[in-house]
Amino acid sequence: MLAMEEDRDRRRFVRFPAEFAVLVRRLGPGETENLGKTEVVGQGGCLFIHPQPLGLEETVELLISTRGSVLKAKARVAYESRREDGRYDIGVEFLAMSAEDQEKLRQALQGSELTPQD
Image (cartoon, rainbow, N blue to C red):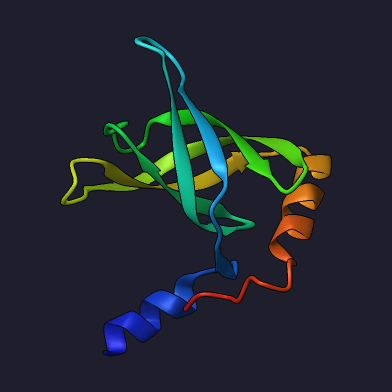
């Protein structure tokens, strides 16, 4: 129980359960592009479901479709784990996002139906 509390304290940003369509583009050699869906989103990163692993520490570009807008982020794969259905949970940390897109994300996460996740 203490480990979970410590993990929560380490988080710098509040996270929200949020389902947004996301286009994921792996950058560099062997560039790939696939659609996914977010499950959890915060100002510092997100968790999305993806059809294949991307590789730890890989850099990806995300186009996230929020309510009425699309925002772009460069991110680093922090973790990935295989789900029972064969797809992958991919957790990323945002590395770069324009101030305008940060504001769009903040506004999307302020929706009244979203409640912070522990």
